[in-house]
Length: 181
Image (cartoon, rainbow, N blue to C red):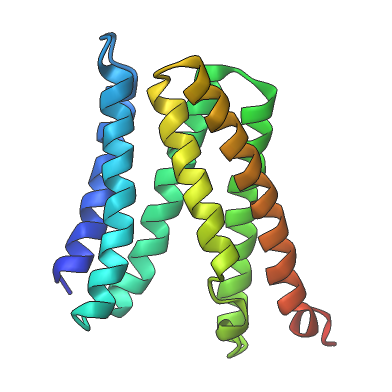
């Protein structure tokens, strides 16, 4: 159970409270450090999946824990950013992204019970959404400059749109099962 990919996923979960504490520290370097911690967590997300496949160390525990770590990490960061910026756009994007994650997680669980989990597997659109989302969050955490913040707002807009589009795709893929009486 405790192979390299699963250890990286557990490490990502441990980084979440560290990220939150560092974000709120009253020091000039706190936002950069919090952005670095979030970036490090994002890299472990990429790395654990790659290593699980490359080293053939995929486990049921890892298949469960990895998406949980991803969703908790992103949700915590978005909630912190929504409260920090106190901005309608970030708040609405946060609500859309977190709501979509809940809906699609429930859909995947239900489809798995129907023996159809493959029809709602992660798509390339979801990967693009995740990349835009992670870059947006890192930029919004760091707040290095106005141009970075504006670029991050743009990436968050892209991520939010891709979030909605991918949700519609997943729901459409499951339409037959959802409407089957």
